[in-house]
Length: 357
Ligand code: G3I
Image (tube, rainbow, N blue to C red; front, top):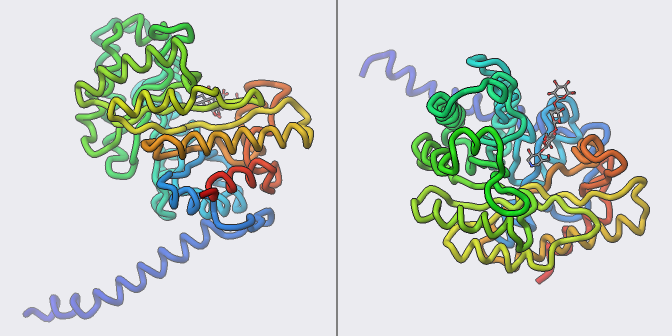
């Protein structure tokens, strides 16, 4: 055996120990307790959810991830999965045609890797948050189809093996039933959905592929159309999961939600709650926050009552970074923790609903 080989064999364990130590320091640094990180009561929500067979996730705000140690601390201790809130959307990754920006998405996926969090890729084909060059490009069907499949392939290949589930197509159903009109349907026709899923299946055969929908949580024309589309995708072996966003207010969880989700799992796909929040009219009185807590508890009970509801993601975990105030002025307080990362009644209700026998 050469001297060089012998030296490598002797050095290898030392190199391993050094790398392992550096990794542990980096992970600790990430999750360090910032000035406003309060230890939350009881077991982390993620561990309670895992005991019920539910992967608990949260939308991830890139700015907070970069600049708020307290936010990172809660992320690392309370959740087992993340969905980049905006970083993987087309307008974020390709603001100019051919100019790819991956920094924010890489930050999310790298953080998840360091903290053993699963990643939900969100979202590849959507009518919103498209870059201007695409939305207003006037592309004809062949060119647009190519742009869509190339985008899916490029993004999925970059994160191959590091994204557990992809929201391949988002919000494709129209509120009154039928498919939502827009760039994709108007130019490519109804087949764009299956074409997107087929491209995704090819790009990463090991990834779970999901169709994600807003406002289809309870039965109704939108959920009925969704069921038809999912049945066909399942027949072609192109789909693994249906995401129900669950953006609620104090009107609560639709009474038909559990039965509706079971209609989908009966097709042989998993179901997931993917963007749960419960918006409250400002200023969010104690009585309102009590009702909000019941809604969050009901949502957990719905997921637990549907055997193939395997994942529940809240759309942000602190009011400090919720999308609600900017999108619905006069409303807010939509998440489990307040602006100071302190648990609200919703946190306790969520925890209790996970703990209940
Ligand atoms: O990136 C720009 C930044 O350059 C600019 O300075 C800033 C001020 O105008 O805007 C930034 O873009 C914002 C973007 O979030 C990234 O922060 C957009 O204005 C803002 O409209 C956008 O809001 C996002 C919204 O989707 C867009 O529809 C929310 O954060 C996000 O939570 C929300 O999430 C969606 C899901 O993806 C799909 N389901 C519905 C859900 C709520 O709409």
